[in-house]
Image 1 (tube, rainbow, N blue to C red):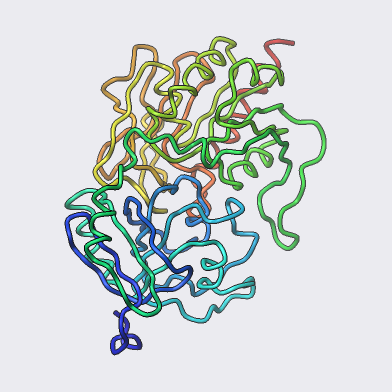
Image 2 (cartoon, one colour; image 1 turned 90 degrees about the vertical axis):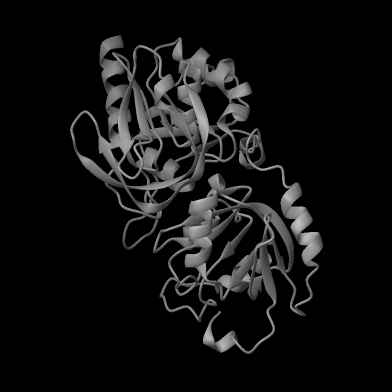
Length: 389
């Protein structure tokens, strides 16, 4: 707990399903939230992380202690509202110091119904996650400091977890829309793409805005369809390529309706590019399997090796499931692996412009080492157009 709050009565508590309790000072919304707990090692981008749809059903512990010191602003939202269930930090958020600040972190969370908790030993909490796996938790914020611990333990233990849970439909758009906003550029912000480009259908399993901006910056006219879109609905747009976005939940659960769509698209020999959940969906459609990880990969400093070139990229990651590389069928090769644990981070179909990666090449937050993948996708559509011509 911070020195300034050490003499105060705790106004928030985090209860793990095993009965472990962490006390601290609450900020943001009041009430109780129940979710899976994960940790994120990124030093920047807490607003982008909280609004990343891939964090649905999760409370995020930030290992970097200074969260909230740059405030919040509308340009950094990856979706309209936070999707992560809550946040746990070491130091209570301070007054922000940044020229782009529009609102403090606490009020920003409160308006959006998300609980924050400071004054926590996040190193101890992170060690617990690494050793025991991502626990189920109940987090409570009560300004009066009154907590029913027994009830909170019960709620944490009764949480069903993310295995078998389809969350993509919950965070996906409900109707199609077009996107032409490109990546942020000084001094005007987000420019609009003009002129004719590659017609890309992006399947929204929980797409981040910066992924769509990267597609637009790579020369794509983007039409976004809901996660539940069928192959017929996708192909009705006569796309030059199909993009499979990131998203939350168990890929096997989402795959019950997404895999048939992807199989139908693959039959047309279109360029296909997948990220994160989209990577896992593509792997399932090709015949591989996915598995739940112990504590997942969440951060902006993950080294990944390109097995074709030997190049190492520092990447941004956010996933709790992974493709089991031992189940990849003949004709599908592993292209990237994590240098942390050797888990799969990329696949490609041999002889076809179909590929995907587990990490987030758009970063936001994180390094831009992997932006070339969007250009590779655009080049594949260029090549297809030349062949058809």
